[in-house]
Image (cartoon, rainbow, N blue to C red; front, side, top):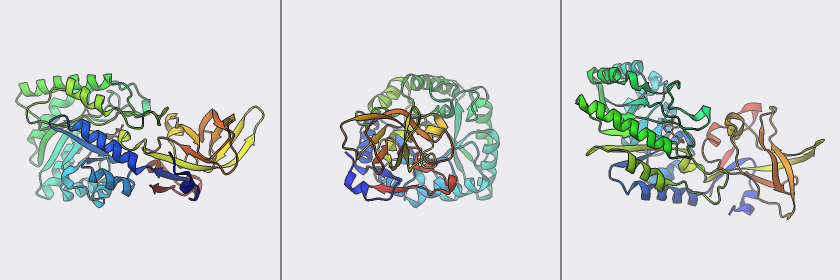
Amino acid sequence: MFPVEKLNSIQTPFYYYDKALLQQTLDAINAEAGKYEGYKVHYAVKANVDPALLGIVNASGLGCDCVSGGEVERCLMSGFAPSKIVFAGVGKADWEINLALDANIACFNVESEPELEVIDALAGVKGKMANVALRVNPNVDAHTHKYITTGLSENKFGISMEMLDEVVDKALELRNINLIGLHFHIGSQLLEFEPFEMLCSRINDLQDRFEARGVTFKTINVGGGLGVDYVNPDENPIPDFATFFATYNKYFKLRPGQELHFELGRAVVCQCGSLISRVLYVKKGLNKQFVILDAGMSDLIRPALYQAHHKIENITSTSAETETYDVVGPICESSDCFGTDEVLPVTKRGDLVALRSAGAYGQIMASNYNCRKIPASVVL
Ligand SMILES: *Cc1c(COP(=O)(O)O)cnc(C)c1O
């Protein structure tokens, strides 16, 4: 499945992206979301902003979800229509808000009352109305790693349900704010659908509550979070979009004329990417042996940051025998380890190793730590 000969001629480490798989994933999203009236999908660009990938996503018709001014700029550069860009984030700086106002983006997903006031003031200076959705913290447990759960009351994200009425009143009163919707995002890498069902029921109740006081919303944005199969990427290269959208169709009460927006990041780009690295050394320890790669945590930080595991594959070994290795990077940190007790075909210096399912939150999180270079992209 890997174009090994081609990859073998390229300077490692680098990220390899499979364009065809990305296209199939986008086609599946469009087919499944397209079954339901009013469903609109945005790509959460923080997962990966490679220009070639952004171009493919844009061509497939998805909108985009940004969490910084830099991301808004990237999306504009990649040709996304401003009317398809939404902008979230707990800490939007004035220059970022101004940039988004100047570009006439579709919507600000606002996370606090002071932010609402600043957007109102900056929009006022420009004589503009800012479309706003309020990000609500629905207090739903996403059952995911604590660093990627975002919808519990104690998280920094969003406005609590208890305080929402007050902030809605404020939004309705501010003269340069046009309140169009509510926004939610409960976490990432969710592998069960039950938290999404919980989210739907929370939103249904909220909508009833607001309708009782005559407040309606044009859009409801439920964020992203659909997980991918890191263990068996070949068996499940495309996430279960059918069940994902069907869950919302079953549990979410869409009001007449209302739009339901989604912001998928990981599920769009994760499986199409691998970090390709070369084995520098195979080192024998007292009780272990180590495969030392030329890629490390500066190239792919998820294992060190979230105790994540990426499937490790030796894509050039022809050996029929296996050995057990710890697979590590070259960086001066003990957390720079991709896997312990990995069973791989007999591995030697010069072999190519693929760290699978690395298309999301991989290259974009790369750093120059240890004065290392940011890994390049190879899109085939
Ligand atoms: C990160 C993020 C997403 C995307 O999350 P995934 O788990 O990658 O789908 C969507 N919306 C917001 C507001 C986010 O911060």
